[in-house]
Length: 452
Image 1 (cartoon, rainbow, N blue to C red):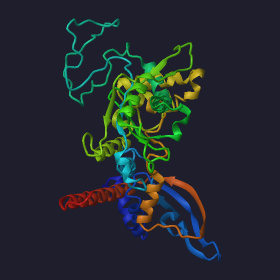
Image 2 (image 1 turned 60 degrees about the horizontal axis):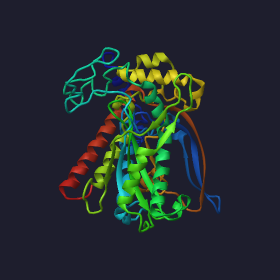
Image 3 (image 1 turned 45 degrees about the vertical axis):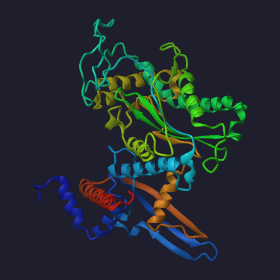
């Protein structure tokens, strides 16, 4: 035993515990979660009319007198099992808004629908992949003596891709402040699209909600240059949302023109600073708008939903843009396993976060995400279902249903999180078994022509 690794010794100790079968049931119920939350407490369900106890649960009867529940972290670099579950929920959430289902009518598929990509502006020349990087016939150098061009054809995974040609020329301040204002820029974009649709239809802008509703689901993705860009599904409904047809003037062409115009028009100004001045921030010049057709012409709806779901589970560690954990000192930044470009962005966040005029932006709190403080996925209220509804539906599928005319008295407290080395080893095995079983079911369904 002394010659075994610590994790193996701990796993053997857990397996020999008399309560191991129940503990394994808890681990399996969490899907092999890598960082489960430990709760202690009890819950009692009573008949509202008679006061009779219908169910009672107490963690004093559990191994270690605690219950393990999922951490629900969306990042695959933090918890693979929970991120896969979150990605699946995201797929169904986005897909329901495209094709219907989950209490959304199938008629939404015939509405004006777009898949839009909004990019960040340029903050300086960076190395590119897939073609000659930065061809320049006349050569030349910047004021810092570095070449203005690059004749290399970089592989997509080359370390140089996304890195500035000249770090001293790159506008790190604008990059960080753009991230900090990206959510406000998005809000103004949505407002401006509504206004342009109203003006083009000849109605008063303030009355737009009485004629139509703009629904969307959007996801933020880090590019190789560590700048966020936005993918969004935009749908035009009637005033009551997905159950209501849009007005006759609500055409795909009109929506497309409004999106293009708003993407090039909206701006946000930063607070004035003696150190940086006042910056005017906008979207980048590249705006990609794909029309989603009901008859299958163009991007496939399932592919769009899968694309969004794939990126919602990616952490900053996986994309190479920042870290998945917050930093508290400059030493944390220096020790982070990131590129020089990203480290400079993190230091810029920290420096600007110390200026009183930027205090509301909380840049030091969001240094690990390079100043971006918006949610990775957001949606409008009427786009489709919610994560809470999908979780409730999954609980119902597993038999966890609410009892009508009953009241619940619950008392819970947090007592810890995570696994011991041996428990982490067993949980990883459980997660792998579940993933393999799901893959086998998908393969069987595909071979039989069933839906996946």
